[in-house]
Amino acid sequence: MKHRINEINGRIRKAASSCNRETESVHIVAVTKTVSVERIRVAIESGISIIGENYIRDAREKYLLLSSHPVAWHFIGHLQTNKAKYAVKMFDLIHSVDSVKLAEELDIQAKKIDKVQNILIQVNLGKEKTKSGINEEDAPDLINKMSRFKNLFVKGLMVIPPFFDDPERVRPYFSALRNLRDRIGSSLDSCLVKNIAMDELSMGMSGDFEIAIEEGATYIRIGTAIFGERK
Figure 1 (cartoon, one colour):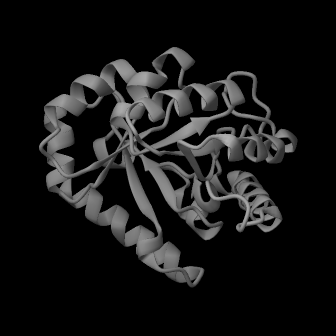
Figure 2 (tube, rainbow, N blue to C red):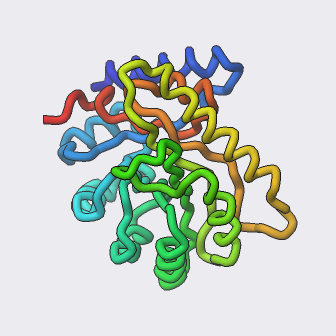
């Protein structure tokens, strides 16, 4: 696993260099869906510093068993409103907020534990019915509504684009997310809005992360390339 992670880091350096970006501006989120605690521990010992989980139930057990390890925890799956109280207790960043209803519940639960919860807004650029996320045209309005939540901080955007065998076909979706981020960011009045900063882009997975980096990704969600195919 150490070899795989070193190889990914090398590919990140090459992709970042190709577009004049600092390697340190790209962060690996190790996707640990179905991965055992033992293998996650090996990944951490091999240099992984961010764990990405898709399900609250699975994450709770892993979080407890790995609590002594200095890693950040990110939630990258679809989050149900009734699980918000668990999410704010475990996760440093939630990638998948896509409604005012969910944001409101996260704000309520974060306030209870005196926390400002960092979030990303998930955008469904492909308008796929099987995927969560707000439509691109509705994203600016949703983000504006986030300004009233005192215990949330919007850090940027996330996308899960349609799957293509050719990674280059995914590039337009990554580019579109970056452009949307830039448009929203330029429209914000930083003097008035204190809890929104369009700094982060969560996009790119094992098969296309180099293209995502070229298009501005700051978080790349890597599972298979680290842990191998799921069994």
